[in-house]
Image 1 (cartoon, rainbow, N blue to C red):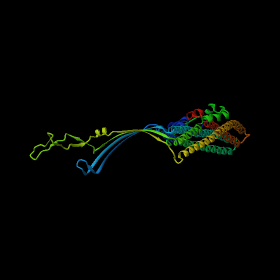
Image 2: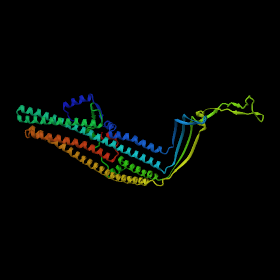
Image 3: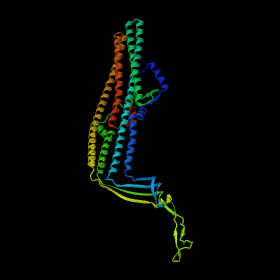
Length: 483
């Protein structure tokens, strides 16, 4: 286990007291929640859901109710006096209308199918977006862990350089070495201190980038906890064998969500052909309406009109057939009550409407051709995507194999550099070697250890990249793959 410089331990302990622990799984989860691309996709999905419901509603009956109150001012003929008078007329009409599409040539069904396939296609694309966001966060997370590992290597090298400085100082004090060796070792220590500062700066930069990428509050302090180099080695990730290229390509063509999204886009375009053809077919609708009305001009007689007898000048009644002759009086009138008028003025209708498009200036034909072009274009995009998927899988496999070979070479280099450093240190103690040879061996060992860490974390990322290229990597399973 590496010996880390005391300043690093104190700094890490101080940060850990007031920091929030963020694991790789948590980082992926938060990043997906905060990702603008994912959030836009979720919002857009609501709109596509409305489009589906709107397309389905086209097959439902249409029902409307209208009320039309009005008040008219102006001249009108008074039937009672026979005069033209200024008057105010109040009217109120109420009606209900309903229509049911009996046959629309299949337009509604095609529109519903198109809307559903477009929504499913967008959902599949959103799945792919989540996977890409998860992998981007994992890459930056591993970069942070790698730079932290390199900082630990530099801290260990500094610790070794300080120990060598103490030994050289003892030899110089004893007269066994020239003072120039101590000056040279002091330069080595300064070089190692500079390298450690640079490595620590890289770690801090990675933290800032990762916080921004995840969408965390930049003013808070976080402690990112993930698989270290030893944990990756023990997980068996480096020794797990990949499937054959043919198997991985076949799995990618079957499971990639972006490819499924393109297939659904083709189905949506095919459904639009049916909708375009339906525009040129006859349609049949059933409609019915009921209504009634009120007018302030409508009146009814009230009361019994008085009878006026006809008499002579002296008041003697005039008889006709022995019966007094009389004239009926004028009755009184009142506006017919509104509810009575509603009952008396009821009306209704039921009808069928057959619409046969005879000539629409070739609009329906044009719509069919445009829909067919969209199908062909979507199919071309699918063919191109299939080639891209196969290429991505092949490239990911080659890079994973190369990373595995680099790791094996780096491990051999670390072993050889460690042995070389031990030999140079022994030669220096025996007086057969120089301090320069020891410093060079230490530098080569640090470089080899850094290369080994880079190769290890690079291999972990390349294996995750293979799973992404295949399309079977769920964001929630990414942390389990790398832990």
